[in-house]
Image (cartoon, rainbow, N blue to C red; front, side, top):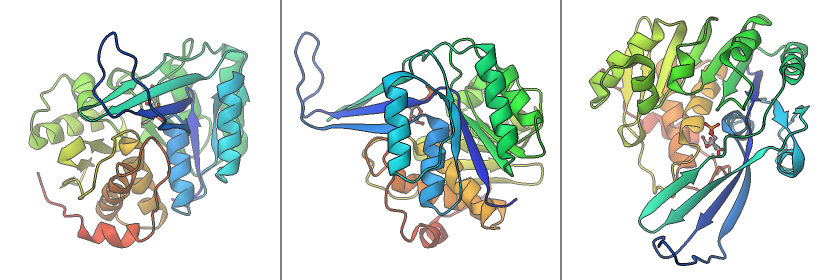
Length: 305
Ligand SMILES: O=P(O)(O)OC[C@@]1(O)O[C@H](CO)[C@@H](O)[C@@H]1O
């Protein structure tokens, strides 16, 4: 694998992050001067993090309306190349509220996207001809997993996916990696996921659906890597957690950056955990300082669960 990664976000979002000083109370107006807007959506986040990790990672997908324009501008400002398919409907705004006692996340379903736009997107991916494609995030209204299989089959690239558990088992093509979280592991397999060993068994079951690697994000329990030949657990690295938005995208980014640098799968998993620890320490899906992150991964333990 080389370092040429194209991300596909079919349902991008402007991530609106609001921090309030008091717990939310029904019937009372919460006011704050702490608001942040980030270009988001899972694939776009992977492009942002990979770019900051010095891996070439242009972004594509569907954009429309004022939030679509905002995302294009931010990606330009951040030096992330983007070539999106313009749609008539409006890109969504997703909201995170950080209060002293909780993290609330509200995601809009997103725009409706037609068949022509899907075909344009598949053509755009084929024209880019990357080594690796990452298809990540929810599907907008009108798009099915068939579009993901079409992208995976449109060329010789490896394809990584991060989507909800029920979608993962609908996919038919061959995939390099999927990145489920704990709930998605359960959703995809119906197996229990209370312990790390149970998560490992569920990840192995999911792997047999057509994934070379399953890289599962387990929140405070860290991450798992399951392939045909190995099952490895890495506990979460120490971090002052501001919010967990983008943590899974960061894990996947670090894993792919590790592979792009020629690291073994196990070292790439440790890199993913180290990258995720940096991302949870900043608010929203803002890109943190990744200085020294490849050294920090040496402090990430791995073991057999
Ligand atoms: O609704 P989806 O597509 O599943 O998730 C979208 C989203 O929550 O994922 C990213 C964090 O992983 C955010 O940038 C974005 O708001």
